[in-house]
Length: 111
Image (cartoon, rainbow, N blue to C red; front, side):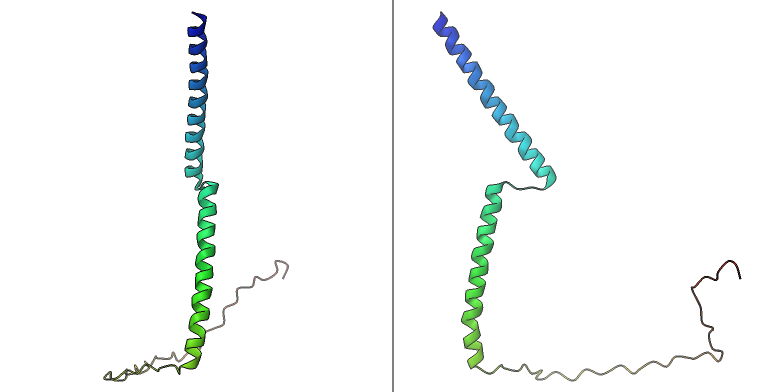
């Protein structure tokens, strides 16, 4: 009978430990989600991907630079498109009386 009791106590302790781990993981995930945080593993994966993409960008830029330097740049022409007309400037009516200058400075109180 003591063997059965010992097994029952061991199972209860294991269940308590597993439940505690489960609750901690869920609380941590909820807090991280609420605060907008990501797990360290996902952050490391994203940083590795960014580094890989930066290397690829540098490689592509260096590969395209010599090819572009050897060829003259082709100019784009607007074949068949009429030139855009410029709008005529509008005439504004000027008032015959000049506007007074407005000052935003305050005058001292003792004058």
